[in-house]
Length: 386
Ligand SMILES: Cc1cc2nc3c(=O)[nH]c(=O)nc-3n(C[C@H](O)[C@H](O)[C@H](O)COP(=O)(O)OP(=O)(O)OC[C@H]3O[C@@H](n4cnc5c(N)ncnc54)[C@H](O)[C@@H]3O)c2cc1C
Image (cartoon, rainbow, N blue to C red; front, side, top):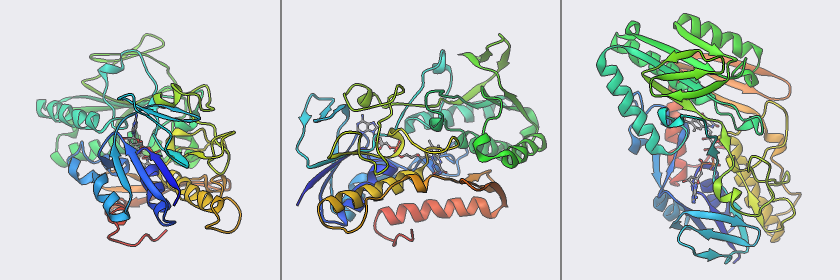
């Protein structure tokens, strides 16, 4: 049986390993963490609705359920003819390689003065601690923002910032202390979130006004300082605690290697997720350069589609499937249940429509339900519906 190595144990890598096992390939998954971190439900850690243990799934348990091998190791370089681990081990013992290492974050001056909920899980825990400290002081200014990447607009991650902001607002209201805190949203682009469409922007604006959230948009960020944010016009927003999600950047192990990649370090692939010019290396999820419409975004559901397509496409090459190779392009849409703590909104965008449907109360519980469903299906304890 042909051997497939999957690099990265996130949403994309795990789905690829599971899907490849359905064709009986000999699968090894290599990842630097020994758990899958379910980012979409990690937004509730800072407001204590979820504990760290609730948003992880041990990779060893997933490996056991789906009969693949898990190796904990950090990849330092990925090349056309193989990859290297941090300890210097070089590996090319595969028939196919699937790269699912996710993305890094753009660097900003003074970023060490901010916290992120979209990088390493430890960062979210640090933010949670700090948020509690500020709340315990009884008053303060909390800032929430995200940055851009002109070289890869699809790598901008704004959704979780809005979710965290609305959840913190609700958390403070539940405690009866919201009026003691100033909540500020900032982003350098004039219309942050515009890929969700004009109607969604209007709805968000209404929410900001209703919840008394200050908005600073269209001003480039010069630097972050210990007590705030300095903008390009040298104006300063004071902050006791800043959560800032820098836009995505290419993974360092990809940048260090010789795979075809964009200027930003995202892997160039064809529509079947095969790395450009290579026959046996595929790349999926946040680590790739996406083709498609200007509003495209890197999302978990697209990462999963790519993973399943790659399993099919490899099986097709090996004569285990019939038909045409599968493409990810027609699956590009934005589908996001944006949580607000006491409800949510279903954001959807494709070529024909863009909408944000408010889902008071139920939206929150739908996202919670999705989290449970996701964990159970990955552990093989519940059948996958789609
Ligand atoms: C807070 C947050 C909320 C989100 N909410 C949603 C949502 O509601 N809906 C949605 O569709 N999408 C959402 N997303 C986006 C979604 O989570 C990502 O698109 C998805 O996680 C991408 O999967 P991936 O496997 O490519 O990357 P990741 O999930 O980042 O996984 C990368 C994996 O590679 C491993 N790795 C990294 N570097 C190395 C290395 N050097 N060596 C070995 N292993 C390594 C990591 O440990 C990790 O396991 C959210 C993202 C965030 C951050």
